[in-house]
Image 1 (cartoon, rainbow, N blue to C red):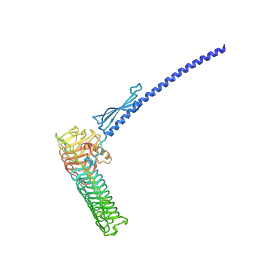
Image 2: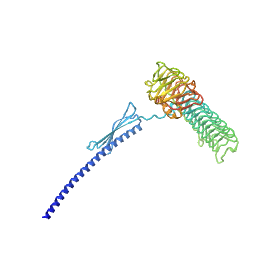
Image 3: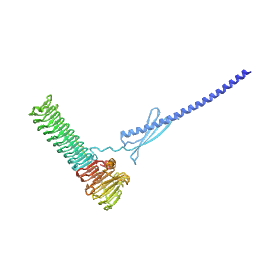
Image 4: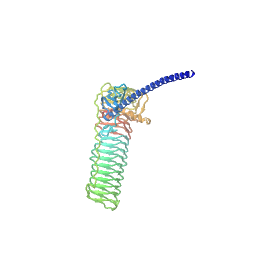
Length: 541
């Protein structure tokens, strides 16, 4: 009887255990199934998100390759497994941004379907720098005779109908002219020199030109003690005048090459005409190729080979410095090599002047007083001695905008003046004057309306260069900085476009680009001019 009771107890225990195991198994299955389903839902949402991101990247790439003008209606791109992304590219007319909408779809039209939508606004690209064929490339653009400076520093390039650089100047960029170029003694030009239709002359002495020199339809003349550190190319003649002038690289002349006493061609000479080494100490350190004769004097060595289209005349046997070299007469092409023609100079159009009118009441700043002016149309601005004028910024992207200034004339140029430019009230200061613009004195700038900085402050230079892009002045008359200010602080800030002449005094401190359409640009001694082009000029020139 006890054995039967024990057997019944074991059976009941076994049944209870089986029931518990069944319940536990069902719970585990439920948990596992829920977890797997949740993971599946999470994965498909993440996949939809990643597809939407892919659509954003694809649209951004379309804009990069096709230009920021690219627009795209709603377009679907199919992926593997029936997945897809749908993108739209639309233009925001108020900001210029391109608005991208991308929708990623996973398992579309099934119970496992998932979608994610992303949006992105791509701002317009920053404008590229001006090209050498654009007037805005030049810190000084002269539409008439000359862009000249005396003993000054030009941090940029110069362009003019004719260009004459006064002695002891420093030009960090290029010098380009439609006609002739004359570089004064002691001047350093870091870039290249190019004349479209005239001669290039480096005046004695101590002129250094870092880039190539090109004279289209003209000659190149290096006077005593001048150095060209790159190749020179002339459609006419190249002359190195005694003494100690030199060309560090090749000389290319469509005409003749004349090297006088103590002067040196440090690499090859290619001449369409003849080569003359005139007197003792003149030399060529590499090969010579001429269409005409080679005429050597006593003590005028050539260290390389000579291929002359004509004859070779050398009274001094020691002129052939390296016995293994070959000197050959009456040579055809080849082996004789023709000179390389000059590179054409940039054809730079004149800046586009704006059409505008002024008219209105005169704005007068009384002597020894202070006034603030806001954008609008005025008659003459009369800025008297000892006065401070504050010009507030506005929004002026084109002529006719309410944030521009329009004057019949800007009559400054008096003693003790201070000009203040307040950039706290808007993005830019754009001023149009029918008549002349004149000023004399310091220029101060503020971005908060209360803290003022003079533009030549050493610690403010980097900031000033950025802010100068926001300042533009245009006159249908002349632009002049006068010397009536006893502080001897003759400053200017912002790009200037003048119909006629631009005149700067000695010692002027300029952060700007200066351009004339029909006039000339002239400066006194020792100006410091730093190239910064205004945004308005970049957009409208």
